Amino acid sequence: MDPRRLSVLAHAHHPIAAPLSDESVRRLLDRAVVRGDERALDLGCGEAEWLLRALERHPRMLAEGVDIDGETLDRVRDEAERRGVADRLALHHMPAAEFTSARSFDLVLNIGASHAYGGLLPTLSAVREHLAPGGLVLVGEAFWEREPDPATRETLAGPCVWADLAGTVDQALADGWVPVYAHTSTLDEWDDYEWSWTGSLARWALDNPDHPASQDALKAAQQHRDQWLRGYRGVLGFVTLLLRRTVGG
Ligand SMILES: C[S@@+](CC[C@H](N)C(=O)[O-])C[C@H]1O[C@@H](n2cnc3c(N)ncnc32)[C@H](O)[C@@H]1O
Image 1 (cartoon, rainbow, N blue to C red):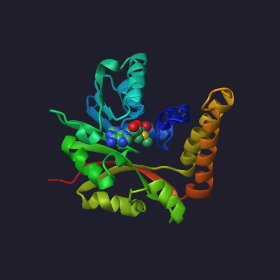
Image 2: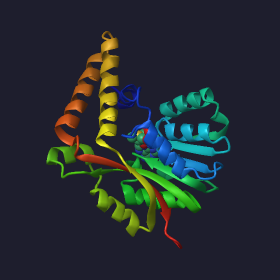
Image 3: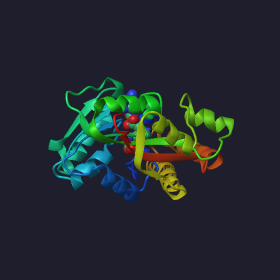
């Protein structure tokens, strides 16, 4: 099955493509949007659920989203219309690294999409180019809660080099950033995310037994569930850091 189609089905009940509850997303956005008239940029926005929620809550905010997945952005346009925020949301179909803008942004997001730049530090350095003075960055990154077995490391991290939580924060500090807030995803949030992912996909397969992709979808749900329950449950962590530059940085 086409991986993008699979991801759409898997996220049917969890539009944020990361292990964060609605309450955690709301709390992070409350800390990230200070005045209510910020210009926000999401690099690797996916369904742009972070931006849509921020725009709904703050009628003077403007936002831009960038993603390489054009079909997803088409859905975001429809969803933005439906939620009455389309006139304040611009979408760009391109690799995040190619995005340029004449104006800088008060808030830049990159949640679960640092692979677009090849890791946390290249992401932070790219984000910096788009950030207005005194601006905030919301970056969501995986880390190792515990040492993974070699198969789990290979399957999940691929070329990404993840540290533990303290090491992840140290990387940001050494690069001239200060965490002004953060959220570390709980095991409950991971479980909700993964049960939603695997469950939504399996449910679609069971509801559509005659669809040519039904068996593939069921198999993908099972493989993903096995990798999670036998591999990275309690091993892979996720932290969403709200960062500012150090003074003079
Ligand atoms: C795990 S999803 C996260 C989506 C969103 N940030 C969220 O929290 O719901 C990662 C997203 O990054 C996008 N992506 C991957 N590589 C990219 C690149 N080079 N440039 C822009 N977007 C990219 C994918 O298409 C996908 O929508």
